Image 1 (cartoon, rainbow over the protein chains, first blue to last red):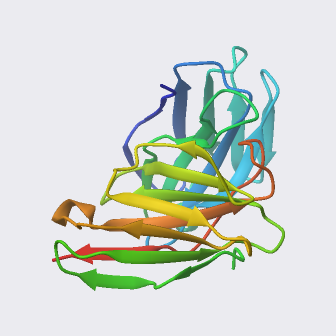
Image 2 (cartoon, rainbow over the protein chains, first blue to last red):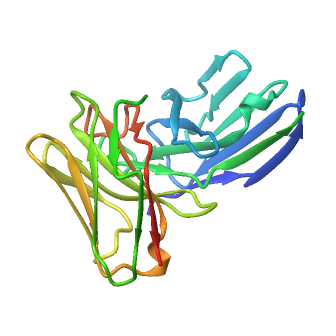
Length: 113
Length: 114
């Protein structure tokens, strides 16, 4: 079935360093979404990518969708303590408009001040 | 505030018991999703309902069941509970039945089975 793999599982950085998490799917995705879950909180939607090779930026966050639409990445420039949390990618469960969101296991980011 | 309401926030129960978790989606959202999150684990998809009908099923145990009512709220029933069922259960809602729109998550119900 549909699988979304995410690496690394954990990342510890010094404040000010950059951070990247990668997401890979076993099948082509019609779209990919990214969520952030703060410690003790619930997942919150960050962004959705739809087009092959798409790049979107939100302040210090840069999201990319691969040309083959099977991988994606989230890059944070100059991390801050407010970036702490777990970042999840999620893709459609059945590769189309139906179905549900299948989440990767997430990358847990810790930032040392 | 995501607009998705889950009750209760915490639940402690004994093995073998049955519990019901409740979710009220955002106003206007027709899809409800249930996810299970164990310690340091990702979000495991359980089941999806759209406008009262089951739309997709994940790795949901036979001991678990769900339904969505005419007013669109949903309930997740967990029976014959085992220690391993202890987890955070999230409900999420979205406007469409597909996975192409943003999902809004509730605060979750933390279930502890003792």
